Length: 128
Image (cartoon, rainbow, N blue to C red):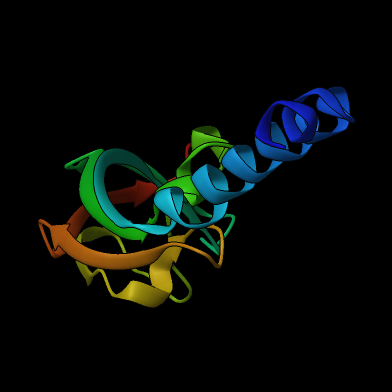
């Protein structure tokens, strides 16, 4: 009886087992939460046209994300960044605090840690 069971439709049974293993691996095994840390560039916008940013200290921020392991597979790391608004700034040294809302990322990723939590911008008047 068992010999006949394994001989009949063996190709379909092999495909069914392979698909089952693949789906289990991708949806169950890969759903485990993983933590990854990236150094993200600091970008800014909204600076008045008569002002220019001379220096950003630090230029990159260390951000740790958590998500299901599979969320990191197809993620484009070049889309990750820290985005700060610099409306109504004056000449001199400006310090901005970084919050979770400043981190541009896919929705599947959660921000766990940000180091450092502030960025200093050195702003001068734009030369004519």
